[in-house]
Image (cartoon, rainbow over all chains, first blue to last red; front, side, top):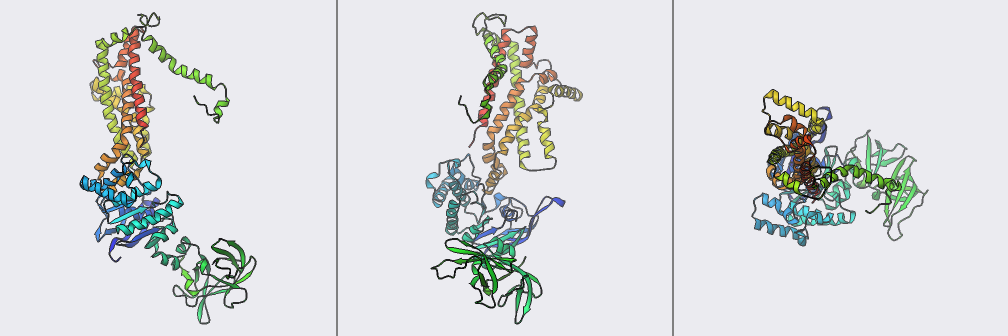
Length: 363
Length: 264
């Protein structure tokens, strides 16, 4: 996973001009490695699809360059790039059979009819739809069309496969199946997948690395674990999973820094490594499952809160807690064998925040 | 006829007689014409017996056949040129936004709304000013102009119903612009193109006003010929020609309608 396949350097994309210009991408740089499942994750309008379309050649960069294995692609039309795309609408050719759809890209590359047909068989086998070659696309279900779109895009053995929210039209059960299927295809073919989605669960489940995007910029790139456990931005922590945010001023208290909450209590920042600047207002984030609850009065240095609500979810229980009647916190506790201390609505609790779970976030 | 009781229209009991009156109003004259075209009597309006003799009289009339040939030449030429232009226009218009797009779209379909007599006089004046000789060519040019919107609309409708990602997918799969057109756009578009062509053909075949104004000696079209015959009096011959034209029109319009329903 060392060799860079796609390299974007200071890429900007502007639609329109003058005062009506929309900056879809703003000085984005990213390296995508060989044989990687790379996901661009973000809300609609964050620029993820634009970046994908720039790599595919469907749009032209306003500034910056995109290179494939060191060769700058900027001026190449899509049909001269060894990159294939799975479109959100699948875009299967409705007047061609499934097999003709799959061989289309091969024929356009002047591969012999015989070889193309053999390759189509392999592809149909790969997506487990061998008996469907002679059907029209309209005779297939959504999930099957999805697989054919994959087979068609993989048939020419591209260097990179681009996937534009390919699972968004499928129902939940099928989506879960296709997530596993996609990951399998990526591993089996060894092709670099660049995947665009707004679904954080999908991104976490499939990706080797995720780029979280917002307003035309990449905020953070990392493994799913990095993104979830050590988010750098408030947006990232908020977009992926649930998160608690505490806002306050950073102050010196004895030997170490604390976050002074508006209600008067302090959160100890001892052993929190990064992003601490004294006398600044800051936001810290902590995942609900990382909060530890204790009966009131058992921990001196802990935050004192009150249980506002208890929601039982089967595998875990979520406690809604208020601190000084103004800051809301969520705590999620796994329900094991009953040994976990259960709290009731109205109870006072002491809350400890493990240093490793606290992230000082960029707003 | 199956009646959908959920449709509130059926609570109004006068609906059936009203529909009958309406359709009779539309089609009764045509049916009368068809029936009278088989009338054996020389006087078109007095029924004396069934005969197909007026059809053989019509088909043996050299003047009539010459007019029919002119009409066919004009309709075919105008159709080919108008359909070609309309296809290019539709593809250009569907492809992307540009300044003044709305204006261009309006101008493309405006000939549908301009009173035909105005177009006819304007075209005639224009031809005289630039010195075009009036005849088949001038009629073909004039017909091409008013056929374009009729050809344009069904083609554009087809294009608008097409997923733009299909062309991108073709490009993505190594087809250049021309290959993408040949292999994807055209096969998906042809029902619209054919439908537009059929409409153009019929519109041109039926046109009277413009042909009358911009035509010259030797370019008499079928509608103009019929008009000339009628001035002498309505004969069973006129009924027969009209019936023939009606059948051609119905066939073409039906084909156009059926083709346009082709879906993948």
